[in-house]
Structures are given as structure tokens and as C-alpha cells.
Amino acid sequence: MDFQENTTLQGLERLRSESLDAGGPTRKDEQHKKGKLTARERIDLLLDENTFEEFDVFKASRRATLNAKEKNYLGDGVITGHGSIDGREVFVFSQDFTVLGGSLGEAHAQKICKVMDYAVRVGAPIIGINDSGGARIQEGVDALASYGEIFQRNVWASGVVPQISCIMGPCAGGAVYSPSMTDFVFMVEDTSYMFVTGPSVVKTVTHQDISAEDLGGAEVHATISGVTHFTVPNDILCLREVRRLINYLPSSNRQRGPIHDLSDAANRTDPALDHLVPANSNQAYDMNVLIRSILDGAEFMEVHARFARNIICGFGRLGGQTVGLVANQPAVLAGVLDSDASFKAGRFVRFCDTFNIPIISLVDVPGFMPGPDQEHGGLIRHGAKLLYAFARATVPRISVIVRKAYGGAYIVMNSKHIHCDVNFAWPTAEIAVMGPKGAAEVLYHREISKASNPEAMLNEKMEEYRTSFANPFLAAKRGYIDDVIFPRDTRVHLIRALQMLDGKRGEEPDRKHGNIPL
Ligand code: HXC
Image (cartoon, rainbow, N blue to C red; front, side):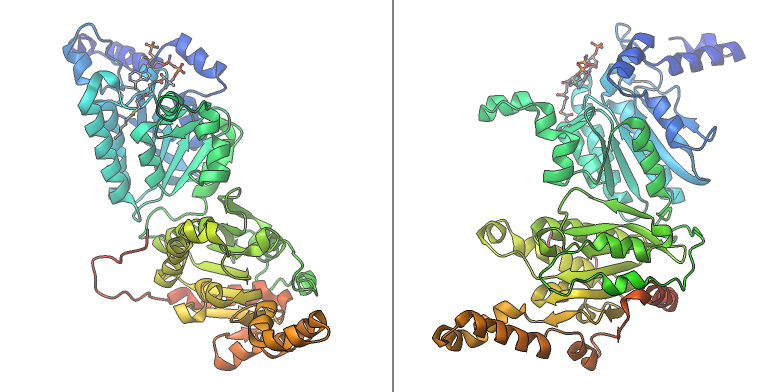
């Protein structure tokens, strides 16, 4: 390519259209046949119409410039720039699989690094659309070095601007570590996968036959590994969901989330909540009912919806303001905390704290999951992540104890003792060292074993314990609970508490950073 020949307006047009052409119509067709959109089509759907401003249209690989045999792809297989989502600025890069399989070489990576740097400098989210064969083999160590530059920027951007990754094709090898260091990962079902080592290496090393989908498809990462926060059936819905997420988030750590008035009265009550908790405290109910009832317009964007379903995390609005919700789910494993739930909620709490999003916890937790699987799997380490995350969070924190709040799990789930700001309880709350059955067995095991009817005696002792200990009033007497409220008024109390906490300033001891139990 001779840039000298193109110094006219027609020449500029020619170069631009060459860049737009990318890998050519055949490869674009192949992309469509796989059910995938092209890199540019994705950007068009992600951003507000006609707002995309592209950078580095003419940037090309140094190798191709020097070596006449290699094709010089203008743009080097990635499209970068900025535009807006509902009027707010975001930066974006979109890997173009039609150019050398979207593989990452030096120029390609420099383009990504440039938009990441801009995002941090101006304080706007960075959204990466990944569709790549990984490190460009022809560029050898330069390609590896370039990945390192991106990883370093992921770390610098962390906690400064929201980072969102869309996996819309292959993402393999060390390349997976960039998305996994971002705040939220979206995967498209059937057309995307992520793994450190692919099926062929697995076969060589472990002699296992496994497909790419079973090894690292969207389903696996949504339900088993927890690598992805969202799965979506196709590219179009993926980009729509990213826009929805952005609407809850501040542009940077210097700002607060955007206010959206959903015309839902702050004094709206819901009498049905008075009957949500079943009379039998061992009976399950769906925490989603409470979540939808209290939030503005019943709108809730759940994060990690299919992973560790015993805890629910997600974004909603109260009085127009974004809040992060962390709620035990009694309908799944009785809402118990296990390693996955602790990791999931811990990371979510950290995100909210970093980006000035108040945290609301809805508590119904019987404790931590007992058993060797969990203990040997590091329940202590993982549980500590959630404890650390809540205790470290300096954003406004509000808790509602709906029913069970036992033992260590009571403390971990945003209790007054780890400096939650406002703690409410419903009259159905059971705040105690352990559940009635466990407590009765520990305290009265001799009497029960000698009783003529041990089961009747156990029930009697459990009932005794329930009335004397498993209620919210002992904690309220101590001031550990600020108020025992009528369930129907929960939304009203939460909005008032948020307003009261609006001017909260978090305090931090002088240190470089804490040592979170990673
Ligand atoms: C250069 C690549 C490439 C790569 C694909 N291409 N990956 N070129 N470097 N890494 C090219 C192909 O040669 C082909 O060019 C075009 O892209 C499309 O690829 P196909 O194989 O035809 O497409 P498809 O059948 O859909 O398969 C896609 C694929 C496969 C599964 C991604 O291409 C593949 O396995 N690529 C290698 C993946 C890999 O092992 N990457 C390194 C990972 S390790 P033509 O001209 O024929 O159309 C890594 C380390 C990161 O990335 C380290 C970070 C620290």
C-alpha cells in the first residue's frame, strides 16, 4: 500500500472503504452463516445511532508494512473508538474475525490499549467485543507482549471505570484473562467459548474427549464455573443487554449511577408482603417476590442468575437511584451460603462499593453449608471473601432481615457488627446463634435421649428456643436492629434510609490496600 497515492479526497475514500471491507465479503458471509454479526454491525447495535467515532482506521501491522508478501489489513483486525449509550459516552473495541481470525498482533493490541487509556483518562466505561483466534501466531512474542499490555491496563482500569466484556466467538489461551479481569462478562450461547487450553490439548494431556461447548461454552461458564455473568441467545440480545447494564452504572468511580425516574411512588406499600414468609419456618418461598415488590417499576437486572442460585445479586432502582441487591434465596438450598455463593456475592459487593452504588441485603440465611465437600473446597477462604467485601464496603449499606439470620452467616450478611448503616428486621426474623433444632440438640441432648418420647421433647425444646431466642426483638433491644418493620412498608423504609445516607462519607485507614482473601 502506498499512502502517497491517496492524498486526495478520493484517495481517502478509497482507503476508508478498504478498511471497511476488512476481510472481504466472503468472510463476512461466513461470519453470518455461523450466526454471528460482523464487528461493525455489533458496534452499530451497541451504540446510539450515528454516534460512533472511530480511531486508528489506518493503523496496520508493522510486519505487513515491511513484508510485501503479507496483506496489509488497514485497522489490523479490530475496530476501536467511542460513542454513546443513551447519551452517555463509552469506549469500545470490537475484534474482527474476518481479518486473520481476529487474532491479536502488536498494532491490534495498541489500538485496544489506546481506547482503554482514553476510557480511564476521561472516566467512561470500556466495552470489549471479543471474537478472536488469540495471539497472532506470525507475530510471536510481540503478540504475547501485547496481551500483557492489555492485562496491565485491565488492572489499572479496575475500580476506575466499569469494564464489560462480550464474548462473541472464540476466546482461548491466555486471552481469557483479559475478560476475566473485567467487571462483567457476557457470553453468546452456541457461538462463543472460553478456555485456557482447548479440546485438543485436553485430549493430549488427559486423554479426555470433550467438545469446545462442553469444555468452555456459555452454559458451562454460566452454571458451573461462574466465569460469565450473563448468557444471551444471540448477538443482538447480547448488545441490548449491555446497553441495559450500562444504564445502571456510573461512568466512573468519580460519579454516581444515573438517576432514572420510573414514576413509582416512594411511599408505595405492598400488603401482600405481610404474607410472604410461610408460617412454617422450614418452608421455602421465592425471594424474587420481595425484590420485585420493593424496586422501582419491579425492574431488576440479575447478575450471575444461573450460578450459585442460593444467593441473588443484581441491580435495580429505589427512588430512581441505582442500588445493588444481595439476597439469600430460600427457594434454592434453603438460601445457605456456600463457596460459590460467597464468591459471587463478594465480587458483586466489591463492584458496588467501587462504583458508589448503595448495597441492600435481604437476609434469610440458615448458615454456611456443612460437609466435607465444602470444607475441603475452601469454604473458609471463600466465605471470608464475602465477609471482607461487606466489611470493607463504605457505600451506604442497608439490611433487611426477613427470616433466618443464624450464626456466622448472620454477621457476614451485612450485619450491624460489620458496620452496616441501617439494619431493619421483619417480625418474622430469627436472629440467633443457630437454628432451633441444632440449639435444642446441643443444649438438651441428655434430657432428650432419656425422654420417653424423644421427638416430642425435641419439638417442645425447639419451640421454647424459638420463642425465647429466634426473634428480632433481642437484637432490637441491643440496637443491633434499628427497627422492626411491617413487611408491607419495606420499600418506604429503604428509600428513606437511602435518602438519609446520601451524604455518607466512608472512612478508610491509611494503607496501600488491604489483603482481601482472594
Ligand atoms: C493467526 C489465525 C489465528 C491466530 C486463526 N487465524 N487464529 N491467524 N494467528 N492465532 C486465521 C486462520 O489461519 C484463518 O485464516 C482465519 O484466521 C480463520 O480461522 P479458521 O481456522 O479458518 O476459522 P475457524 O474454523 O472458525 O476456527 C477458529 C479457531 C481456529 C478455532 C479460532 O482458527 C484456531 O484454533 N486458531 C488458533 C487458536 C489458538 O490456538 N490461538 C492461540 C491461543 S494461545 P485464513 O487466511 O485461512 O482464512 C493465545 C495466547 C495468549 O492466544 C497469551 C496471552 C498471554
